[in-house]
Image (cartoon, rainbow, N blue to C red):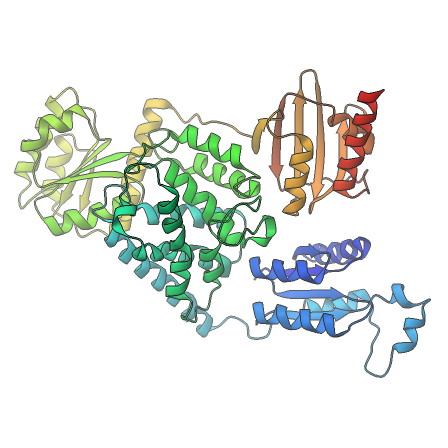
Length: 562
């Protein structure tokens, strides 16, 4: 299993030396400059080993070690002193029988030794229990939302998208479970909000807004007595925080907000924006993505937004970016209709379920679905008549039609295929398999109509008139992000590379380093793009990021006065 290291050292040179050696060994490394930063990191990231460098391993370091172990009980914590810092100092005299000096490679051999308690049957049973719990919660929440016009299938769609973002970001399975379970339980506190507020069809008053905000602390109160093996309470508590610190309930900002909460915040907002609500209509998916980009760095973590957009564009089904495909289910058995409807709603489809086509034909033809699933009954004859009716209506004639048969009847299947059905399902088939086959049909149909063309983006984009380079640097610095920032301004363009929140390289034409960065500060209009995770091997800037920005702005002020 991939192991995650956290290196804590006040010296940037030492941090990089330790991190470089660990990365060469194939490990994931996060860096922190202080013990307080380290506490924030272990709250948000599944860390296996922490290396704390301290010249004086005093009570403060011991407290930090204790707090880290409290946050991550299975985490190993090593406190080390760099010999290079004390070899010419009186501090060396403090070394005694309980102090040891190790070569760096020996230290790393100890830190990277196999974890105690390799995965075995107990771990596998635990994973199975987690998956089962998630499925049970998913079904229960789905049943609660089933007949809700606005929220049918909503939580499952948020969960699916949040899981995809967490997996795309390469998070540990423990953190993914935290995100998924917290997403399912995040709004349980709405049980304490009066129904009149929940169904309000106008903009909330300030009093109603306060009541709605109270659902966050309500959710925490309902769940805090449960000893979950995952850190879901912080995710639930903070999923309405803002990246710029203007959210609630605690006004956290940047990396202070648990990563799971940052993911849930962006995903929940996107799904809410593209969904109808009692007080407003849904925005189009394109408008929703534009709003996410506009709020990246203010309301949402820009790296999460970039991953979310990539996921949405990669996995949209059938009808266009983020648009909900509609499915018509025709089946006389009410229980089966409701179960299938719930599964389809959970996967993001709009679903209408009716016992028979005859009474609803005209209304359905006025607003044709993207797919029809029709129960075959005992001998399939009535369903074949329904198929013929659909094919004879010019408004419905090209809609894919799927037979839902009672069993594996080969003769009925041949009759149905000869009459022109597009696929043949058995009602006994696994519902998840049915949904997957529905998605495949719609995807093929969309490709047939529109081709496989899709939009191409490059990270988070926008206009520098709205978000200037100093603001971008501040956002990346707060989040300790690694990214490449590209700015195109007329005939000029430049690039800045940021690593763990620190500017390491800049380039404009043939100019590099601080000179290039100062030149980019002069760009007043044009487009920017932030691509997270992009690295460079070049290091032309050693200055602190915010000092570099302030120095560049000072120079611009002097130029304007001159």
